[in-house]
Length: 100
Image 1 (cartoon, rainbow, N blue to C red):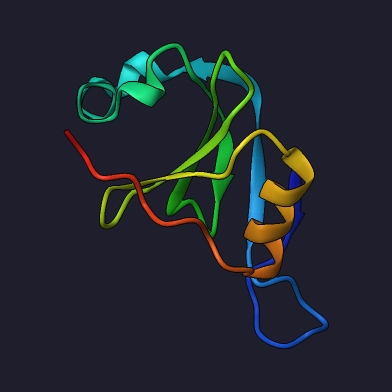
Image 2 (tube, rainbow, N blue to C red):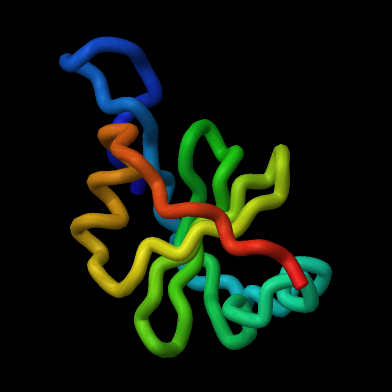
């Protein structure tokens, strides 16, 4: 299922979220798990912003995003509504976590 559409103006969402049909273990991205231990045990729940952002949820319910072009991890906390709104409306993101 895809929500939103990347576009300009207030009529369109600032981005999109393409939800995965089934979760994928984050361990598949071992280089990221080694860099950011917060991803250990997380699962992929989808992609965003024309597939440039991979979305995860951790066992403790934190929503994380990894931007693939520049490989940065963002922790959006445990509120799904705020996570989705920030992605779809282009609201400010939290500061990226620094890799180990």
